Length: 149
Image 1 (cartoon, rainbow, N blue to C red):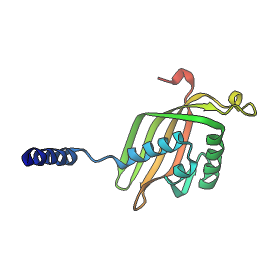
Image 2 (image 1 turned 180 degrees about the horizontal axis):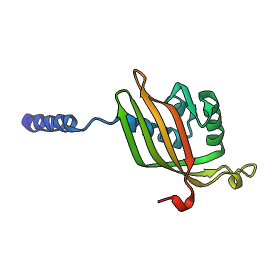
Image 3 (image 1 turned 120 degrees about the horizontal axis):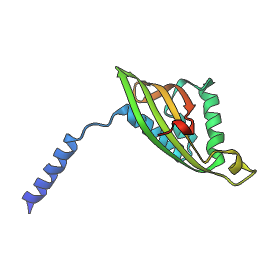
Image 4 (image 1 turned 180 degrees about the vertical axis):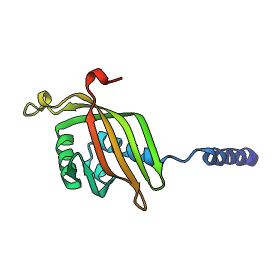
């Protein structure tokens, strides 16, 4: 009885050791998506550098805008594809496309003003800031429907 238990434990250890460690840059992007889907601007903000700049806004202004958008939706869905990361030591440039979908709250006509879906192309500059990878800069543009894959 002890041999099968030992063999099972050894097999688990070998499987755990053979796994490729998660890419911290991809993990960062996945965590941003999860925070958006949870409509949690504070959690999203934890993944932004203190000197973050995005879309011509500071970190504070970006998070305030994000809070307003997330509050306007009952649910949010995010799908990331065409992910590319060019690493250079403790920094990386990320390019990806993000499929956004959401259901706007049915108050004050928001459902007629906010889009139920859109695709955006992002360029992020991210850096390892000691204990975590964080987004330092972000640029994005909406992908016109004709250009979507």
